[in-house]
Length: 80
Image (cartoon, rainbow, N blue to C red; front, side):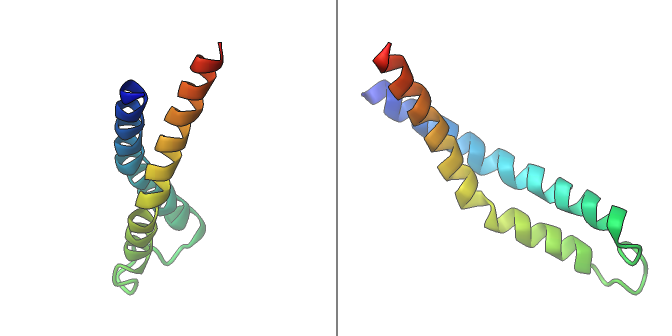
């Protein structure tokens, strides 16, 4: 049980770090691809702030996804 808890904590921390980073770059690339105003002098960082906001708000779902993956793997291994 302790091993599963440590694994869930490790996967949760990995999700807490990895998902916001991935979301930041995905949103930033999509914004620059589909909106021609992004990156121009009149934009004043709006696209970048949108990417940062999405990254900030995806931290807790990343934690939850990481913990869920670890728990699913742990319970599958116990069932075998």
